Amino acid sequence: MKKDSQINLLSHSQAKVRLLSEYLKRYLNIISNDNHTKEIQVYDLFCGEGIYENGGEGSPLLILRQIKDMHFTNPANRRLIPPVNCHFNDLDSRKIEKVKAAVAAKSLHYPDFGSIGYSSTDYQCLLDQLVKSFANLRSQKQKAFVFIDPYQYRHISGSQIAALMASGCVEVLLWLPTQFMYRFAKNGTPEALYDFISELIPDFSDQGFDDVWSFIKKIKEGFHALLGESFFVDTFTIQKDPSTVFCLFFFTSHILGFQKMLEAKWDIDTEQGKGWHYQENQLSFLSHYKTNPLEADLVEFLRTKPRSNVEVYRFTINRGFLPKHTNEVLRNWQNTQRISIASPTGTKPRKSAFYIAYEYYRQNQVKTIFSLS
Image (cartoon, rainbow, N blue to C red; front, side, top):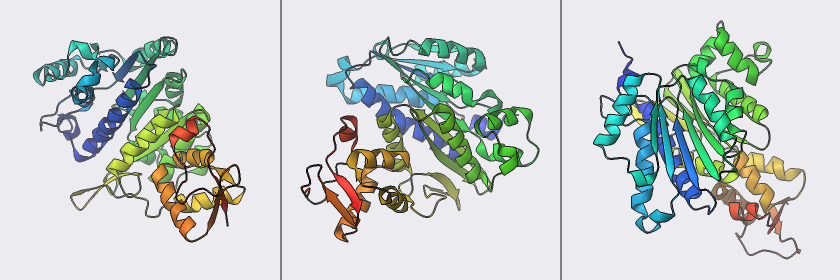
């Protein structure tokens, strides 16, 4: 008998596909307007059936819906949108046939959007093919987005993610059953899980984990160490019930793409941008984390030396917050005279002019210098 999660789109899965959908909306619009990219490749490597018995739409349909919306929301710019080529894969060919039927029934794809492909290929074989093809993305002026929602964690390794990301033109969204992985890590680690964790956390058997949240933090740090400083890694936790926590991991080499994922997270979780959990049979987007660390982190960052708006922008994004959050802190500090703000020429900028934004970061345009008073 199939698990309920395989035939019905459950609440925690709704949060997962909502984050995918919210991010893709931003991603496709950014790439379509960068005046550089000629084609966009989107891959869903464990796509499932596409539609559930309770009518819930899975990742393939939501991906195609975002592409369709992009075309029909901006009809005047439709001819400027580069082709978005989608590829849906699942080892179970019956699921692929159901995806095809659902796409046709809902009229979600038109030839002028780009190509659409289907396969029932083993994940490892398909991964090897993608790694080879992704090596040419930059020269072909293409970008790729990969969604990986594996049925079992044994399919995944940190080195696979690193190989996919190597070209610098790929973004990856990875779903992991972190609660189950954490339990096994504490109580007799299976070989497949041991290999996954030990690659990211070489000394994990010596240090242990306090709870699932510290486990997720260590995995994130391990991914970041493996990928290096040129890449950004973020997480979005989904708490199905008090004892079940899953996590989406996002990987990109582009800071604006990272900011757009943060915006998608904060649209879903307006309090802390950390994740979603289920409470008293009500959907809630309140975070597991009850305190906001941004202000304390900014104090530590500015305590050592004065920092420019360019530095503060990158610091903000790396901490998982948005420029508007840092602006709120800086505005409060400015009102209480806790911070000194000057321009590079030594003049005093107008009030609340902080210039914490991607456009200044991209141009390395130093407009303000911040010092704690």
